[in-house]
Image 1 (cartoon, rainbow, N blue to C red):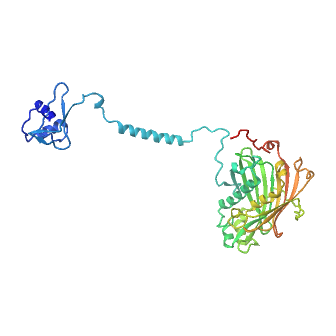
Image 2: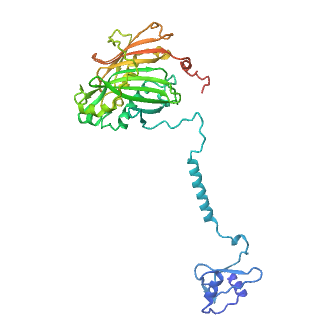
Image 3: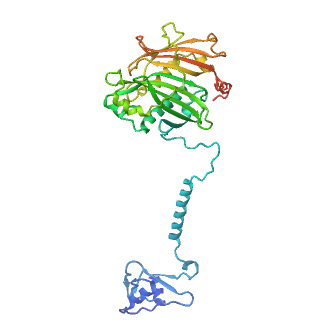
Length: 411
């Protein structure tokens, strides 16, 4: 009531007129009902009338809850427009531009930076050969910091399948052509020869070339060359012989004329890249120097044709090689004869005989030759093999016996 009395003493109360609401709205900038009050601007800055949202109640002809505040002085700052929307738009544009800039390949290429070596490869040599590059991954190397023989063999198999696929001959089988699929035929390897001149190391890119030739009346020979992609140095040579097998009866089959016409135009008339090893692979028995038993395939060892991948056989053969020889020597050549397949429930034995001038001192210098046999527990032969080993280079010896010393710090 004190505020009401003070207000009444400054502003005389008059009867509300019809246009009093309009004049009040004009002063406050909007259609606000001021209950019949009119404000007058004075020279010292003027007064501004602020009304509550609800219409004020009247007591004895006066209104309550009306707050009178001095108007803010007019300055340059509070007359500027609102720039927040414009600044937000500019910020968004700059952030989008920065993101696109970071995605650009603007960094300079160093000599040690690799080009992208991946992809399915391409047909070369007038359509008769296939070429594909591989980068040696960290999980493809062994204790010597070089690619394992299984890694190289997997690269050979991958290029063979991609060759068939790129040529448009891949059916729904594992390397089988459309005509082979119609007759339930698949390819199986019977003989493999590999010569390794040098094992690539982690990060190196290798170039694999492969092509096919006829082998007798019912077989096919496939050759490979693995080169250093940078220098062109030949690292590995491999030659193999393949025949057809009926995947239902699991028996070898002659090559049908339809299949011969389908693949015959891709055959190359050339000699094998590895001179054929005519030495007979002898059979080993229980008198072998080293025998490893209890080997059995896992589900992951089977390919889409439901038999053990031929690369897995190589790993099993080397299971019986003595550890000191693996530490001091590396595989330089091998010849394998695949005699039969094994299934997922098979249990196998790996046998190795060591021969050579330094067979009595395996860890010493000199080359070593080994004979191998992979057989079932009942004696049925799976793979016969012969391998040659050379002393590892001096660059590999520093990784042997690198066992971390026990820490002297006690917790």
